[in-house]
Amino acid sequence: MSAFYKQQPAGSGMATAAAFCGLAGTACSLVTLIWTVFSFFNLDIHNPPPPNVPLMILSFVILITALVCGILGIVFGSASCSRARREGLPSPAMGRAGMLLGIVALVLLLVDIIVSIALGVNAALEGTLERFRRRRSAELLLHWIGGWRTIM
Image (cartoon, rainbow, N blue to C red; front, side, top):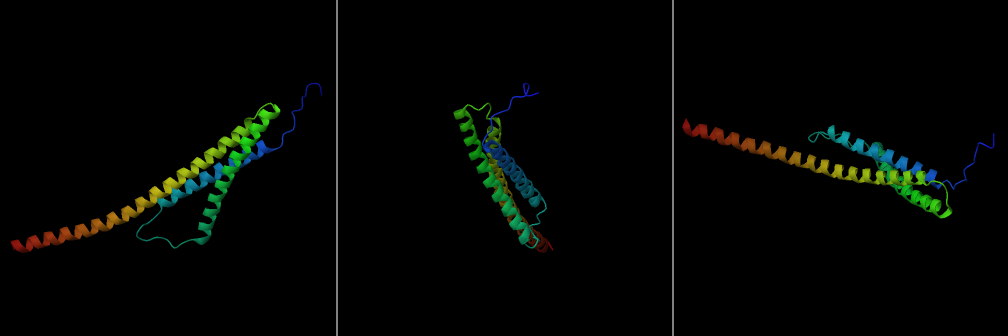
């Protein structure tokens, strides 16, 4: 049986660490992105909910975890790929996968930050426009009532 089985050379585990960190960073980034989008769909500008401190802390921890895991995935993946090339190991595929997942995690975090800023500005502008519309409609109503007074 040993004639058919060829044992692969042992690696340092950097490729596995890169894949794990990249996957964890991507998962955390997706969680923060989905959380951001769905929290803004349920946002009421006029009656904001009270701050939920444990939820805010959890959100911050997940965001930092995604950032750290994404960076570690890129670092471990590039180190694993360079070691595989240098020592002639068969395939640096897992290191490349970890590096790619780390990059995806950081890109998703960037998208999350852009979406958060855009939705926050949109919510602020919507509140401002709503106040403007109410004020303008009150002015038009007063003008309309004033116009009827001059006719009567």
